[in-house]
Amino acid sequence: MIFRHFTDTARNRNSYLIACPKTREAALIDPIESCMSQYESMLAERGLHLAYTLQTENDRLSTHTSRTLRKTYGSRQVVPFRAAHFDSSNRDSEEGAKPGSSFILGDLKIEAIQARRLSEGELSYRISNYLLSSQEILIDDSDSVKNQTSPSAGSESIQASSPFDRISESRKLVRNLRTTRSGVSIERLIMEDLHTSLVENTFSPKEARVVKTYLTHLEDNEFCHPTASDLSEMLGDVDRTAVHVLVHNIRWKQIESERLPMVLEGQTSKWLRELQTKPTFTDHEKEFLSAYLQLVERHQRPPSGPDVAKELAGERSVQWIRKRAHTIRRKQKEFNQPILILNRKSPEISHSRRYMMTRRPESIDHQEMHYTA
Image 1 (tube, rainbow, N blue to C red):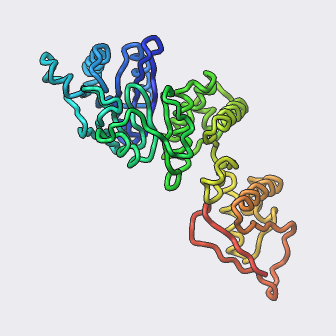
Image 2: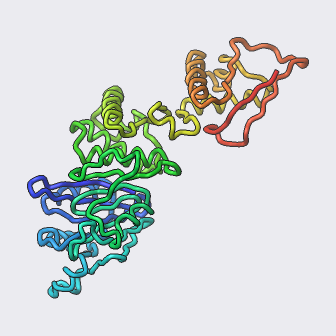
């Protein structure tokens, strides 16, 4: 899911853009006139088609902005049912929403829910694990959000019993009420925490730009982490070294806020250890492993550094080979996996002493190697 937050500090108004990464259909919730240029830029840069504008309450300025967007993009304008009912002049162009109404946005489903304040005619919208209202953003397990925000709950505020309630003050715009992280991808959790920090203006302008670019890569590449080179190329005017420095700063700001840190492709972090079950390898490490495993399968013994370099047609030095082996071993140790063996020399194959290998029929990312002499 593509998610962005916009704000009008002068009027203390919040607006949200939601989009489906596959179909590129987008929706704006509580559009703000002062943010029109930002909407237009976001829609154009990401190749998004505005399908809906949705309002949480009957705000005249938001209604006017929605009409402008409808005329420009042909989007469907959705307002709270009571507002639509009384505005007879726009009955043909506006759609009414009430608790229980739903709208399809590609692979996403937007559900209208009674606002927690129980104000007459005011709604919140739930998309996946996000509950968006004019006053706050709640992030939680979908079932928990649904149960805690139903009209029958009748409570003025939600008490978070979660150990992950890192932003519990009622005045905060974003509240994370997750009760568990199990079954949720690390990338999704990282994105939620980065969204939270962006909304709270935690980052400097340069850092915020890197974070938004990082989120764009995750959203458009099925949660695949970018490399520093990827970010540098996407940013255009920031070199790879500067990207590493900015990512380092972002990572520590997240850690200090008790949030998950940003990680680049192939990186591991002790702060994510409890959520990871296997090591991840960089493209260079995968290149090494592919050649290494072919040699082991062919000769039934661990190869040496020169053997692997030769298998790669001399495109990589022995020093490069040994460095890759070192980083792979380190990752295997962190996850208590069998350690890769790389011979210092290339001995002749001995028929009396033969190395046997057993490996799972999985991809390089998941392969574990066991040797017995």
